[in-house]
Length: 330
Image (tube, rainbow, N blue to C red; front, side):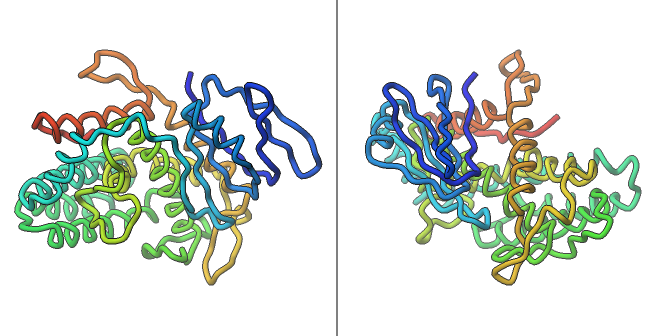
């Protein structure tokens, strides 16, 4: 089974013959089998050299870097053999056509909103107060198809998210934690820190799957490109945030696997400590590898595979005009 590696400790990556090893600060060496390794997430201070990068390129292994506070810094990826000028041209054509771009962008928001509503419905049987939020989001959902441009669509998205996030204090057993409102850079409380960290993990997980297709991650449709390096992964991540990030948060807090002691304060905000990061990453990884039955494929597939399938569906829409339909959890 293909799997990623998460490095929280500081040290260095070295190439040893036909594999790589991680040497910790106290000079303990751990060999890393590369046969089934897809990507490496680096959270600690890790040194590496050109020999390691050449070997990772040969093995098609991606590196994702995060800083001390859990913010995504950047990626190293071997890309050349997946390049396709034809697909790139078609992808740009869809972006430059306002009608086509808006059509794709609406599909991302439709999928995201349906998955948010699915979360609320699942908890509304026990929490009656959620029904009012459900009605509000359904009302906003009906406005998506009437949006006339991306700016208007993003305004609807912001209202849907704001209403949806207000349900977190009802769904989650926060005890002495509370959400209040969404804040990002920096996150002002623990729940915001969890959302920001989880979203960063999802953005990179989606990015890794895009790298395995012919699509260019720099050209998105819902999120404006501007000077961002990548936007397509942000678009596709919207569909999976409620399923992978939010449900991971619900699980960890309701089971009290993450508590106030797993956070630190810094940069005028609140961030996950190393203990919290490790716990979150483990649960997030488990959820990515969880299999569900696919009606279309007639077999069980992991959520990680579903992300790749989502990218393929979008690619077919772009090059073959096969109607893209976003993933919605049943």
